Length: 150
Image (cartoon, rainbow, N blue to C red; front, side, top):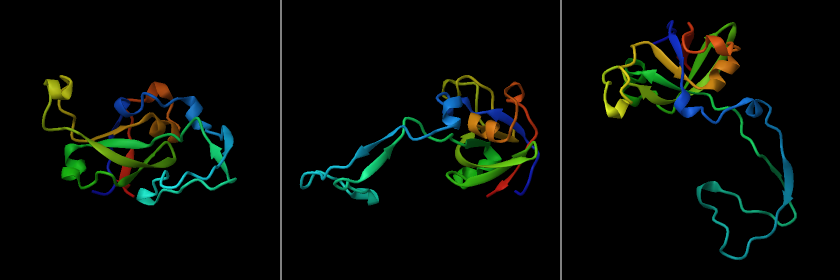
C-alpha cells in the first residue's frame, strides 16, 4: 500500500485508438434539438431527452483515456478495480482508473497470449498516462514511478 517504486509499462490493448488529435479535442459543431415523438425517447439511466430548439454541441473526439492494469498483489483480488490511483513521475501527477489485472500468477498459455506472468510491481498504463506525465515516447515501457490510492 502507499507509495511504491514501480516499473511502468505501456498498456497497449486499451490505447490503440488514442492519438495526438485526442490531446486537443474541440467541439466539432452544433445541432438543434427536436421534440421526440411520444414514447420515442428513452430516459433510463438518467438520460436526457432532446429539447425542442435547444442547441447541442457535437464532438468527433473524446478526451484521452487514463487507465491502468495493476500486478496481481496490487490489484488485490479486484478491490482496486474501477477505483482511481494517482501516478507521479517526472515532476507531474495524473489520476488513472484501474481497469484490469496484469496477472503475476499465470502465463505462457493461450489465455495470456503466451506471455510470461507479470512481475509483482507493474502499473501497465495507457498512452494518455505517459503523455500526461510528460514522458518522452522513447522512454515508455520501463520508467520508475510512484503511485498511491487516489
